[in-house]
Image (cartoon, helix red, strand yellow):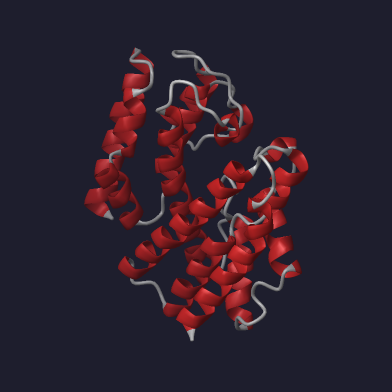
Length: 261
């Protein structure tokens, strides 16, 4: 039943996305989100399978991974940006369109609540401390999976000398060495980054590095290490003393997470 439900929701997601993919000149932005969603689904399945979570958490995490970004499609169509601060909260839009399109009508009520809760929470800077355990687990799996794939997307984007699609990195300003001091200092304090404070392309890179501090599952840390994403990003950042200090701190933090779970 669970596999059938996941595949049914996956088909509904593809049906939802299809008209957007036919929009003249905008297929890249929408294809980006379709491909991202499919990879997040795969990562979430990996984390859930290797972390020994209950079956209902496993199922809800896979469904939430499929639906976490459907709000990006109407967001981009209306506002021509993926930057929530300049448009609308895409997580809230995802919940709204999940309900409007009856994406979860065939799911049990308890699973539906977990999925909608995790979708709504997936882009919060931090999770509330008082979440029910199952909802916390589903939200954490989706958040870890989302971040891991955005690492990959950002590295691919930043590797280009003149990226064709600035919307991928939320239209930040290009500069080889500039970054915001407050963004770096927040990471040196072990805090996660804040989309509202980024100005330069290096701010975005630093913010992505800081997501390590918010990864919840050891498997997510393993994947981050195995794929070498942090090293790749640091190699593209300025080699000044503060950035090098952050690199040492991040490397040590990841080593502790891998050692201790």
